[in-house]
Structure formats: structure tokens, C-alpha cells
Length: 154
Ligand SMILES: [Zn+2]
Image (cartoon, rainbow, N blue to C red):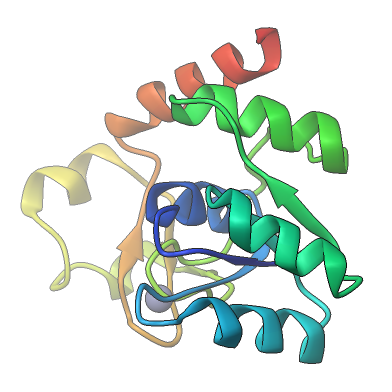
């Protein structure tokens, strides 16, 4: 799905990108810009700003006023509203930093790009073709799964 989010939802942006969604985010866009882009690019507007939400709805846009305080709660609301699957599939996953689809990269090619320990502990790696960041399902992965599991139960 294609979203645009307001400047308060940077964390959620990263989650949605990891889950494979195309999310536009910048904390430099004002309300008018957010609405224009949402309309032009047919993006669903996610916001924590009630006034912006009401403006968007009045203009006929698809918008969602996001409640919840934790990432798990917010993901749960989104999953329910847009039938988003709370599973990360690396084939669809996007770079949390820049929204580009990540691609698998052979282990031998990341040897100079990551720490030695990481290299010896993991075998599967992905690279963002745009910002060249390398990803792997490391120790932080347990926390990611945990948040998604919590969201599923919320
Ligand atoms: Zn990237």
C-alpha cells in the first residue's frame, strides 16, 4: 500500500517500510503539501493531527487518524483498518531509511561493509540499492518479532 505520513510518525514509517509498504515521510512537509502529495500520488494519509485528518477527509482523501501510543498499538490499528499483514517478508521489504526495496546480497560481497562478528554470525544479507545500507536478521530481530506479535494480540 502507498502511504504518506505526517512528521510525527517517523518510527511508524520505518515499520511500514519493513513490512513492504511504500511510505513517503518528511518532517519538512506542511499540511498543505501533505494533502497535495497524497492526492497526486494516491497515497493514504496517516496522521496524529486531528485537524489535518479532518481537512484531508473533507477533500475526499483516504486518511486515517492514528491513535495508540506504542508502535505495537499503532500497528494493530493499521492492520485492522487496512488489512495489513504483520509479517516481514524480505522479498517485499523496503529500506526503513529511504523506502527503496532491499535486495539479497551474497555474503562474500558484504565482508568489507559490516563488522567481523556480524559476518561470522549470519549468512543472509540484504542491501538497499539506493543508500547501500546492509541489513540482516540480527539480535534486534527478536525485538522486531516481539513487537509484531504484541500488535497481533492487541
Ligand atoms: Zn535505503
